[in-house]
Amino acid sequence: MSPAGPGSTGGDAPAALRTVELEIGGMTCASCAARVEKKLNRMPGVEASVNYATEKARVALPAGTREVALSVRGDGAGGWLRAVLRVDGAARPLTFAERVGFTGWRRLTAPVPPGARELALERVYVAQTDPARRVAGALDLAALEALVPPALPAGPLAVDEPRDPALGPGTAGGARTGRVAVVAAAHVRAGQPRGREVLRRALREALAAGAQHVLLAGDVVGSPGRAGTAADADAAREVLAAELGGSGAGWSWLPGDGEAGTGAAAAPRRLELAGTRYLLLDATGGSLRTAGFAQLPWLRAELDAAAATSSVTGVVVVASRGPGAGAGDLADPDEVELLRSWAARWREATGGRAALVGRADGPVPVVTRREGVLEVAVARAAAADGAAGGWTLLTVDADAAEAPRAAALRRGGDDGWLRVHARPLGAVVRRRARTAR
Image (tube, rainbow, N blue to C red; front, side, top):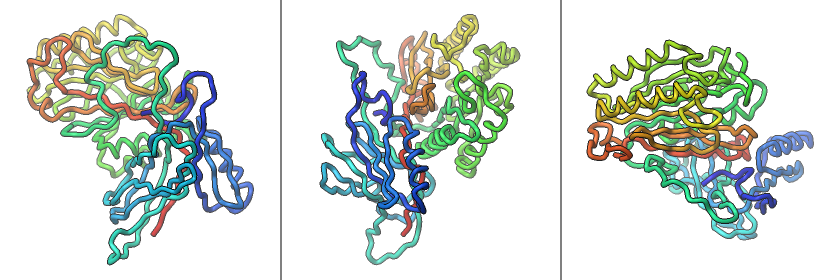
């Protein structure tokens, strides 16, 4: 399921629209309403009008909405988070959480009845289910989204290669002991709120998904085709400190073209989690050797060390550019062949698993496999045209992390070690509201 935004309806015909009606407090004049309306209309796929007199905003969204998503910072007080949804003129209750027993940010979703012609979210509120209790608290609400499924293209469908089993579902349930969020191409720029908001939302969703570590896989700052500045890097660091500080999750920032000259990112370095060793490289400019020739002997030594460590059952080599054939991949075919051969030999010699991770050209991850080695291209957080993108969650299975299933590791086989979960980011239709009780 993908977020509402450009391209979600397919073809060249204009998309049918649905309407979300929001109450907006704190406006003191018509200029306030004009500023709010201008901000909303800057968002991809959004047409908005704001009425100062009624303190309401009407936001048109593409038809086909299946879910409404809301980012919530809980207070742990156990309130019932509900909304009033008006479907074709009839009011219906909508539940985001029966009990807000959590603290910190989480992304909550609620289903929307299918087939509605008009849709309006009138208000969001907190109810107390126990009449004997009187609890004071507050919830922070952010990033209201309407999610629609992707449209199928017109005409006959091309026959694709079978879906690789490592490309997991959008959510990661079950016993997955290692959870690493990969966020790439957020394009944070000082003085421009969009990139900061993209990064902020991706980090909040990553924490809500249980990520133990966040990998920033290049181009977190700057803009497509242009490197960032020190001020851009400072703006990104402010978001990282605000969202990850005190969360217990670690983070690493890999250099990409956007980080060139900013000093914001560092590689190579090593990370180990749940029996899997992540080796992080610098691919600025499209070449590992140009970015830092010493990385290649370092990588060779790290692979040898991992092979000699019994607790390591898999290795993942990560860079802002991967071994694929896309415009955003490594430009030197010799380096591509070197990475692939080293990963395949490591796998054959140890009986473990290996993966090469780079960045995709689009908003969804891509998974392929060569000689039993996974090649993963993670999603872009912000598309080059400003449309909404996504982030990627990498998870490791508990049993597979402890004891490799050698029978499944034949060429082309899969033992459930690594799963790649696509997590789309939708258009933000309300920056922040506060619900108190």
